[in-house]
Amino acid sequence: MEVNEKLAPSDLLPKIDRLWQISAVKIDSIERTCTPDRGSPVFTVAGRYTARGWTEWTQGFQYGSALLQYDATGEERFLDIGRDMTVRVMASHVSHTGVHDHGFNNVSTYGNLWRLMNEGRIPDAQRDFCELALKVSGAVQAARWRTTADGTGYIYSFNGPQSLFVDTIRSCRALACAHLLGHVLMGEQDERISLLDRLVEHATNTARWNVFYGEGRDAYDVRGRTAHESIFNVNDGRYRCPSTQQGYSPFSTWTRGLAWAMLGFAELLEFLAILPDFPGRAEAVATMRNAATATCDFYLANTPTDGIPYWDTGAPGLVHLGDYLARPADPFNRYEPVDSSAAAIAAQGLLRLGRHLGDDRYWQAGLTVCDTLFAEPYLSTDPKHQGLILHSVYHRPNGWDHIHDGQQVPNGEASMWGDYHAREVALYVQRIARGGPYHTFFGPEVGR
Image (cartoon, rainbow, N blue to C red; front, top):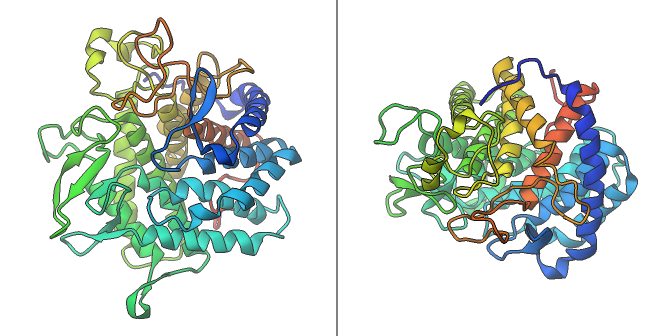
């Protein structure tokens, strides 16, 4: 990747202002056609958002996008959409015991409302409602717990107790919010289980097993590479092997999984920085910093010059593209799709880590990715297309992504998570550029 060292947040404001103008049209269109009775919108097919039953992990991004739109523009009708639909639709997600996605659905909705209250942007009228939802969500997420052979544990994925997903690192925001609100998980015999302890243990095990450090762990141990899934023996808790659901192979790097790790670890470093000292804090911070820097370095080394990655670094068709890292990504090539949603997530991870560490290399890389993402061919300027950021990929191995006539691979479509995270990173950069409050999922920073 070629990093633009001279780019400043203010340089992106014209693109960001345009993005919000386009975004408003998309949100209005989605609300007209993607009603709750039709299932959660997941990705577009020929420019229209459609549902895809697997797990309902994207509904929070739909209504959270309206809240981000309000946050960025002050347009009250988007606050009304986000707030009203959160009340009407999202309750089942709060108590959903079958998924690892609480941070996606509930922090994007109840959490955004709570953050806006903490910032004094909206009235406190629904504070108790949102805080109760966040407390329950964090505890339910933490209850999906499997103990490993060393006595620690992890939040297991919807695949079952043997499965640790790299994605879940960003869903740990649910536990973080609940902990900040003073909540605990109540277990057998009224055991009070610390949500912070479970968050730290999950993050530590994700860093240990889903991130590689070039230390010879296996034949594919490259520093910063990630595995989508780690598999454990449920009888004795021992680690068995890497795996994947949405990547090409267990021994290649699915780039959206990489991006989840980049952002998840960077965001948790910001969260730990506001907490009073606790036992094991120094070790946890060191582990998360090591994972964050390794994954961000891998992204920089394995992404085309413009900051947009292909969907998997080991995808077999990449061999036909020649030296694809030496030029901008090509979403219209014949062999392998790019994944703009991975770029949207990764950009925020790079920015947050760069700011947290005071490292301009990561900061400027994050701005560079945004500079590409917020313009054509990635920004969707067609008002008839409901997607905001084009060339996103959902599940390449399952063949779920739409391939247009005359094309060989998926392109030209959007995803609900890609659009949400593009809005989130646009809001992040906008606040920096305009001197607004620093944007975190927990609201105003403490001690800065």
